[in-house]
Length: 467
Image (cartoon, rainbow, N blue to C red; front, side, top):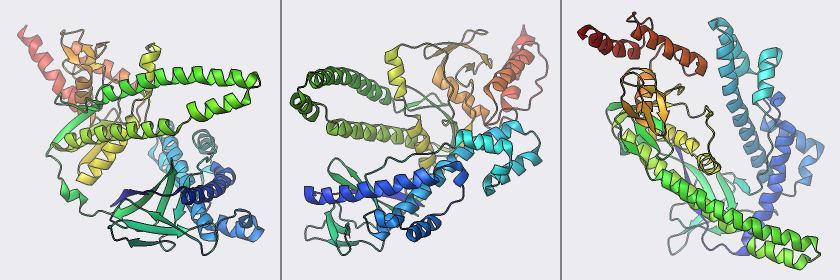
């Protein structure tokens, strides 16, 4: 499998960085042009070679001001991004196809048309493609893609590696010192941030899976707000996440309020004609370099906590059952603005990435299930309980559950449920939960074949017979 490694420039002088920034800016115009002309869903199936040949024939390539290999690699990279964007939208379209067509033959035909690009002939698929695959826009102007045969690497006396990449003119090379002793290989992606160059490259890691084996059990996990994950055994993993989010959110609230006051002073000065004062304030007090650096450090800490928590789960489980974090279930509760601001920083995307990446690398199976009402059903009586904060109260037997623990148990038992699939609407899920609870209450046999229904029905019957 492929993994990405990042090397950083070491003491790169400002002249070289300025040349790289200008090259990245010009290539950003190329990338934006590709997205503007071919980012529409109706351009499904366009190839980068077709775009390249067309631009070379009509003279568009002569206006870029960069070497041919540089803009060709940018075109190929942009087309790959457009394809990924379009495929992500097709995933949502497949979900609507699953809900619309009940007949398996119709579903397969729609899936085939969607995959082969024949969706334009189907009115339903065409409408959904226009709905979920919007015309994208690229504002990326800080990246340079360098092909593997377009750069050289060498090692200095201190052991650090240097690379040289093509500049804006033919024959011109820009040497970049790196803070690593391992030379990068393959196609490079140079990302320019805050005066420093990040060199991203992919390497093969075939033995990565054997480095750290997974456990032997099966565990369900629920994503929390104050911790990364809670497993079905009641263990909390990554409990420092809530503190990180709260501290960063409160810091940004105070910092942004102060910046707003300073910005107001600058705007008033500009309105009064004092341009020098306004420019001085914006230059010295409203910069974004420190903000970006702090944000980068914060995101790195969040990713470290999240991946550590996922590793802890997989240390004891070779099969992890988790909720589908790509779907959203908005709450009807009205929360205060401070709570909303902290929840807006909820990093479920990082958690989803960590679950998929770590489970694949360590050889653990990952199953995604429907998350509807998993944190509202009490595991003791299998009914919809009453939620109060992080506590879930059973209105039948009076037991009190920790909501995330209850959610992890429900997620684990939802694996293999024949009635609740990944794409079952939440209204239908609620209906099934109520129907199963009514059957148990009236001592009727549970009609569904889910393990939850068979297992949960037995103790209630025994208790009723003893009475």
